[in-house]
Length: 148
Image 1 (cartoon, rainbow, N blue to C red):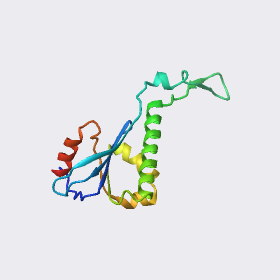
Image 2 (cartoon, rainbow, N blue to C red; image 1 turned 180 degrees about the vertical axis):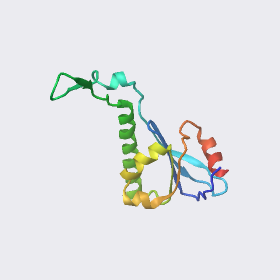
Image 3 (spheres, helix red, strand yellow; image 1 turned 120 degrees about the vertical axis):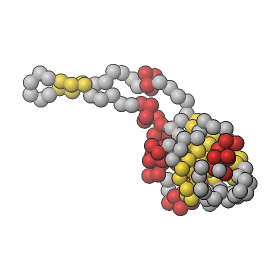
Image 4 (cartoon, helix red, strand yellow; image 1 turned 180 degrees about the horizontal axis):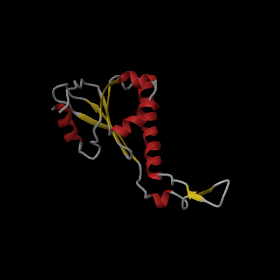
């Protein structure tokens, strides 16, 4: 499915807006053996529990008209904050020189949030980005996907 060489010692981050798996390949490039190093999760709460009140209203300066202000998507904001935390974790690992080779697997929107928050060392370590959401698969199926 993917044409990426995963050498021994490569780290793989599989994430979306609510869960991140940080894996390390302890096997060879032909048969990856992914070991879970860390799992990060964010509790999923509905918008009604995250938000505080109904959307605000604005009034025109002339006349009596008014309109509603667009409500903040609290779920999307929480996902962005979570992905910023994942980027900080990747940066910390890259700065401590634990990560020399990195593959990131995430949905396209998550990749778009992660990229600008990764430091120079982490970006230099990236060997591949796979725009796919595999966070809910078991590790052995992720191995099969990468080996195919």
